[in-house]
Amino acid sequence: MLLVTMDGDIVYSLKRESDLAQNVVSGPLKETNLGRHFHRGLEEVVITDFELYALSGNRPISFLIAPIELFGSTEGVVVLKLTIGAINTIMMERSGMGETGEALPGGAGQAHALRFVSRARVSHR
Image (cartoon, rainbow, N blue to C red):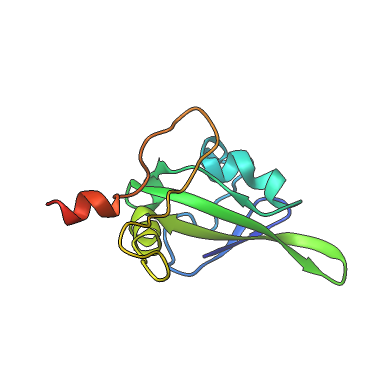
């Protein structure tokens, strides 16, 4: 989890990774999905597609970016880093789906690659 000011400064990092004290608007992070979607995240909740994120060990990361509002004024954003492993865990949950039910996440954009491991693929290994 990250806390980012209106100016794009990362002022808190739960895991204290090297993105702490970076700026998502003017620094090297502006070329990441976090930097590209930061301004929209000040207005609404945004979930980005996965990309390799160098500051998290070059792992595929998706960002959930949401505005922080205090007394009717936006003060910055909270950012959750979502890993493929976390999404796989959610997608493998079977409650209420019976024997053949499966949830499939959709994505926007040009990349339509499989973003998780299908339950059918796991059961056939």
